[in-house]
Image (cartoon, rainbow, N blue to C red):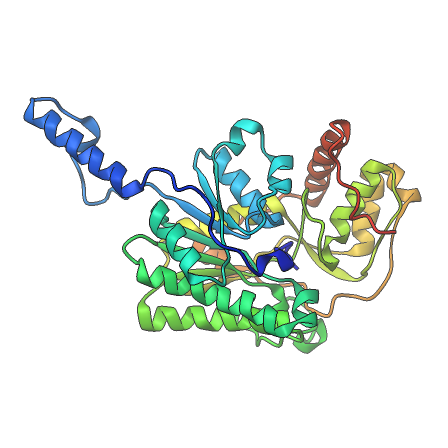
Length: 381
């Protein structure tokens, strides 16, 4: 559902060359300050410390080579922060499509496996990580084909995140993890209309059950270890870089229109279209929140029928009318959700109008096409 990592998320070992240790940097600064004060010099940043000051935030992103993770990294870089990308995939295909060369220099790549606690331990301790945004997972088809592997990556991997945070509670201030609307059942299970906060979770896939388990485990870690977290349940997230999963259809349709290629969206019915830039911002806002507890939020974008999306696409990109269509069945998951818990805790969520999101996505695809870098292999006919 969310453009997460594929089977490459299974194995691997950390092979990055650690930068100068952050603790060593702190010790050097303290020695410099002591010597300067002894000579009568003043270090402005240390002359008047206050108890409210916090150490610099350092964000570790698992699965950041995936769709949403790449946009989270992009958003962090644009805000002036660095990002530590923890992933088995070192190709950085999506990041290279989204970031400039200068911006890529601020992304620190760490090769590691979420199922390996030792890899996570080194990454968090060596780099002084304060916030973990966990998106590494196997998608619905992979979990269906190999449920044991799916559980190992999606459930054990998430438990490793929480266990590592528990062992480094002096460093890690917040965990945000990707859950999914797949924890819910079909629309008819909820009587139609908007599904309210607190509605029963009725997943009908291994993937959805694994995500439900992660939400439950997060609650246990708060109750027993006082570790606060936030789980986000994105819907049909669209934007440049979305190329996997059945709900990637709308994004692929935009790409097909730009490329002049035929494409069929393999679903009909209702969806909740969420622009990836908004989703990335909500992940970061959740990470920076001081709200305590094991929170779970269901973001809301623009609830629309696929047929309405196509009409908007045809109006904005008329060439699509000849090449793009939709067929198939509705998603077996409800799509119209109440987001009042998110708004209550984090304030009004960013919600880019669908028309603007389509335009921006088409502009990125058009730039990549002009540069000869538009990947078209995902446009199955």
